[in-house]
Image 1 (cartoon, rainbow, N blue to C red):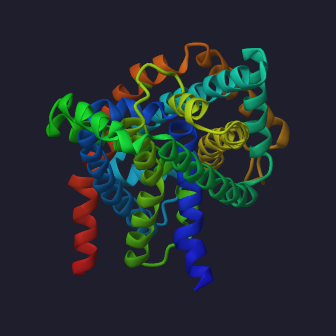
Image 2 (cartoon, rainbow, N blue to C red):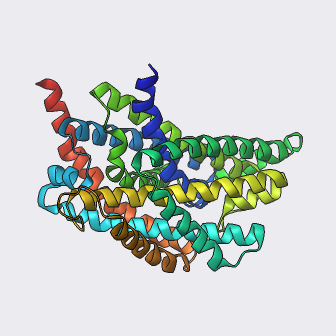
Image 3 (cartoon, one colour):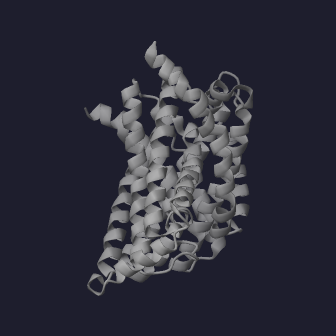
Length: 372
């Protein structure tokens, strides 16, 4: 039973959630942009839509990868969309640099606000932590992600409890905020579309991290894993959305809403703990994205010496430093600008290149295999 839980639930949840949580929930900015901006009820509608899309896409991807033993995203997309596989790669590279830029920007701002460090020092520190994480190896990276996931979830629960405890429930302040937020909804259709867009771009990392589901053995396990990952990924979004819309603190213009909420409603010790664990989790986001790219490069035998299956250590260092240097330049743009302008555009691209082919090509294959 423990082996089943580890390979079907724990490892997939740890890898996927660590990558998604660090870049998005770690700042809270994505929750504002895609959920809370639609108000309390609209945000819940967006979350429900995102959950349904997550389960559908994860199940279809996991089962197609399992059936064809395609755990390299290049091979996976060659099988799914044939000669157009490279379009996904271009979109993924753009997303990877964008997310790494967000990670570096968020980390440098938090370290500057909390400890007074110059922004450049914060950027270098987070990028160095990402690089060190990669040299631990894939198996150690997976184990470290599981530990980080548990630590971050504990802090999320402590954060939510702290904010809820600070609300003046007796004065009906929370109810007033809900009503005000609901009145500003652009409509259920708009909220649903926002939730779908959120799912599209977050799910774009799924094919890159297929190394986490190498041990799935059946269609049932693919479905169980898909539901578990979806719940684990979206539960923090629900907690953050509720805290943003109930606490009465306007965070719509804040670069790092979670940090603002903690500063207003959280204990000083919780703020310090959150910053430290968040920095580590942000590093895991970057490490997970880069590990997926490294495995793709090594799988295609690019920059890999003859008779070897992996990059030589020196080449790996050069590769990682090059990618992180570009990310450091992007981080100077700022979190709000990066998320507001970049993510929605990429989400549309991933919806067309990844989700649509899954519906048109992937699901019929799964149904045909089930019939046979």
